[in-house]
Image (cartoon, rainbow, N blue to C red; front, side):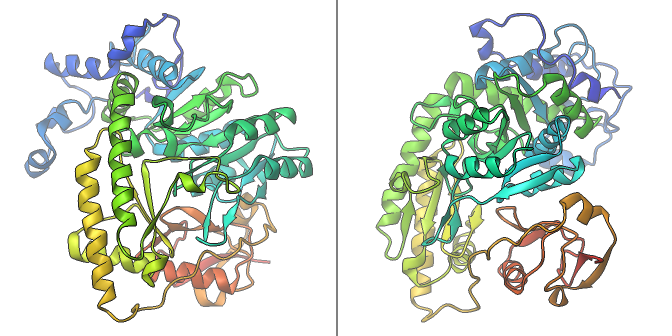
Length: 505
């Protein structure tokens, strides 16, 4: 199937778009038109629009999911001059304020890998924020980049990382004059927004592009009540994980190219093709098209409602003994230039318990499942368009139940896990460590060895150990504690963490 070619090439198109076009979803409409015609489906997928699918699966997810599960390479959908697919991508670029946008069907992870591969065309050295997502580390390995890492601001009270400051980036770039790009993250999992305008200025003054993993900020563009988006602040390449908060299907995202000329559009296009499936999901693409339409036409109103609902929840949380919230009061601290109100981040230190224990109690008592659990902070996220007042009321009630139950326990059972330990020194490039001679040792015997695989505790998916970093006792204890408290670790071959792969030195 020619899915990679049609889903990357000529994405900009030539036909100008009218403002009213934002009210259309051309790709979604093309799928619907195709299904309505009841065409002869002598192509994949083998369920043939639902006929060949398991009946229980059809009953569970609905027949429409199969009717519109249409592959790439169909005339009038993503093949032909100025196809609906091409128009949908142009509408996305217009909505987010990009020079060009690419739909991704392998999530934000594909975008981070694409960005790294594109940067490698300019050179091998980059400066990267140390708490980048694990998929960026994957991209660094795939591209053979040589990263110089710079630490974000760490909050000593809460034990969490905020954003990278312009001053820290400037110092890191000055120490790495051969760097061809700077990679950063904003917003954070907890809600902090970086001074992206300042970061872009620092990078551009030194002649390098700024790449921003804005996976958690795809909504920022669509409301004056929110901080400015990375593209508005001058970023050169921005990753937007639309499914997180803007309502597309899981695993769908968009990569945006900024207005500058420091990154070659054709190189990005080739790298998108390299990293995408040759059988992209029409359902994922259609969900991006529809989410873009809703954000562009109704986003401001929907976001205002969501923000109001979350703000009411914050007030209610502050009334629960032992709980407080992270919010705009943090703005002005190092690494906190703005705040994203769609995250309800709750400080649990006043309960005398841990985030893990509070979250566990909420799940046991009320079947409430949170996005992130840290030692001192738990995080719930709200999406654009959800009834935030109703869902927040249920969330706040559960927090009250959990705190009340913990107060009757007379202590915190189990061993609390400490904040993440300091990151180790990178002694070998991630690619050399990942691909070079290695052996498997018991996890408890790995202290002092160079890691050959990435260990990223989920959530939030930020690597605690990179390939090429030396393992410490503190790191091993922390990663083990995360698993014991119900988390999991991405990157390790042995998911149970009985063993770990290390470099043969």
